[in-house]
Length: 151
Image (cartoon, rainbow, N blue to C red):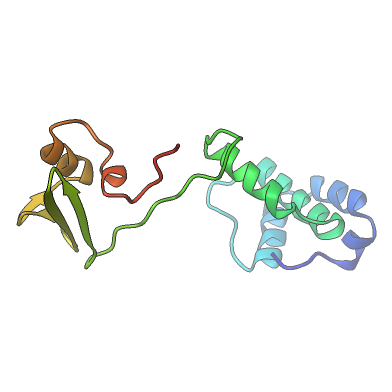
């Protein structure tokens, strides 16, 4: 979002108080002025007000430091707040080829625009392929080394 007005920078408390008196259409206009886009559809007046008030204060007093920002994002995602950040994994894209050796045999999965091919057979998921290979339940991404083991 763009920076707030000089008045907001001089007294953010009063700027936030002035926002609380504005009707929804004016808050939406302020959002557009700050972000260059319309506010998300269905955003309540209260959330719009809170978002604008946060921006006013962050512009004057400083935004979250990167570590706090990461920590809050992890909490919001439901990730425990200790230990290293989880590996988001690799996004599968058409043209990728995954290889995994299991019991002395190399298994190859091709990622196509239509999905996954294993031994020339379309498959619904990597987990289904891992199960077919091993006979046990596996996380497909973990089996093919696309995610951390979590250890």
